[in-house]
Each structure stands twice: as C-alpha cells, then as structure tokens.
Length: 338
Image (cartoon, rainbow, N blue to C red; front, side, top):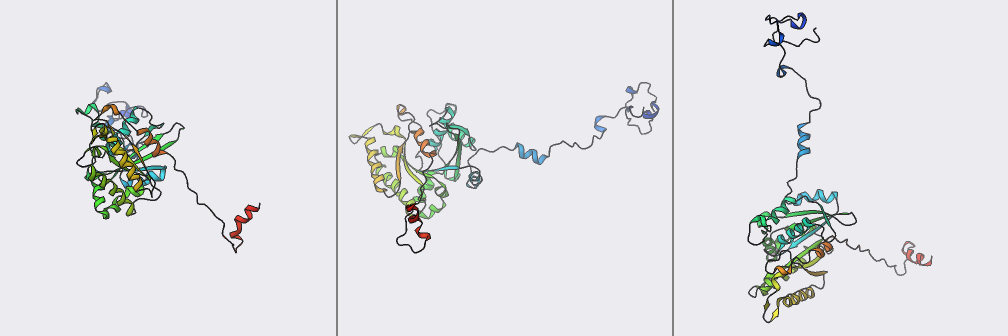
C-alpha cells in the first residue's frame, strides 16, 4: 500500500499506510488534499538539460555583413584565399561591379564557377537591392560606399567544374579615401588592402572619359593614382595590376568627329606604355547597362577567370660558379659529367 498509494499534502494524513483519509472522504479523489500536484513534486535535476552557454554557441548565427580586417586573418589560416582590391574614384563602379558578380552567380555558374557559400550574404543583398524591381526605382542603381564605412571585405566561396573550392575576398573602400591618398601620400600606409591583395584593379570610368569637361583632368588623376602607389611602395612586386574599364554603355555616342571607343583605345594604350616597367594589363566590363541596354553585361566571366586563375610559380635560375675552389661549388660540374 505504501509503495502504490499516492502522497497527500496533509502531514497528519496516514492514507499512505492505512488507506483512510484524515478528512473522512470516502472517495479519495474527491479530497482536495489527496494527490500531490506536479508543481509540488521534486523531480531532481535534469541530467540531460543543455548547458545554456553551449546552446548559445551552437545557435549563434553570423551577421553576414562585410568582413572586417581583423576577421580575415582566421579565414586565411583555414583555406587558401585570393584577394582583390578595387581602386577607383567615387562612382567609378566598384559597388556596381561587386553587385553584378553576385547577381550573375544567383542565376547560375559564372565562367565555370558555381556559388557554394559566402560569409557576407547580407552585405551582398544590401548592395544589390537597389538594382532590383522590388526596390521600386525607375532605373537600376547601386548605392556607393561611404567614407564612414571604412574598409570591408566581401567573401565568396566558388566551386569549379572539377569540384575544387576557391575562396575570394574583394576589398571594399570608398573612392574618396583613394582620392585623398592620391594627393596626400602619407595616407597610403593606411590602405592595408593593397598589401593583402593578390590583384589590384584600377577602375577606369568610361562616363568621365565621355565627358568633355572632365576628361583631361580625370585622365591625369587616373595615372597619378597608379604613380602614387608605385612610387610609395604600396604595391608588392608580386601583385598583379590591371586597368578595368567600367560603364562601356557610356561609349556609344560620337564626340569630336570620332567614336568615344577610339578615345578609350588611345588612353589605354598610352597608360600601358607609360607603365611598361611593371606588369600592367587592361580589360573592359559593363556590369549594369543603363545608358545603352543593348550593350548588355560584358566581361564579367573573363574577369572572374583571371581573378581565380592559379598563378604561375617562378623558380630561381641556378648558374654554376666560375673557377670554384670548394668542391661543393663544383656540384653542377659533377652533374654535367654524369
């Protein structure tokens, strides 16, 4: 009886041993004191309860905003990464180019690379929103990076057709900051993305080439930007340099009796000749055509291929010493005799 009879809240009740209710209830279920409520019972500690600290760590989500410089060190230790820095004045097309890459990968593979993951999806979506119909804008645009935003990095993990993963970081900084560093070279040391970059792309704005009022001053400032970085040691000798001409849809009109494309051809050739002492190439893209929709999206696939292409390794050339005294220095001579 004592093993099966339920407990009673009344301490004087002996129902557990005698089976009789202390309040003389014939039906025990009708006694308000009979049977302990679940809240009054002590079930002890739950041995399987999740640790609140561990649960918080398991359910924490990444913000998916731009990666800060201090966040990329850990990522670089985990996987091989290619880093690209886009350098250009404000409204040169940096944000538009980044948004166009994201939009192309949303539709499917680009240049043989498929989207696998990203640590900055929220940042990509925010940049791309104003180019969508859902933004209710009359024409597609992308909001430019503000000076107050500082330096951030977009991240993409792409998989090629062979099944290999490639991680890409794209540095994002306002054009005003680069313009300030061009005129005040003491600021160049703060541009840490240049030292991290495997490739530095100088964005050449076709819209300013097409504008007769600012064309000549813009050309001069564009070359000055490259000179400022090279002369102040901001670029590593192993860094790949290229000119990326943006907004090709702006070059359709005629000006001064010739097509603007000829004006661009001449300036690109002159710039490459001026910097013939360094490895500098040129390419052209159109990421978001607005002035002439017939131009379409141009050059993104080839640009992505070049960004992710493996770099050819350079090995030092070894030559034999002349009239060596030590036997160790005659190793090449011995090898040639074998």
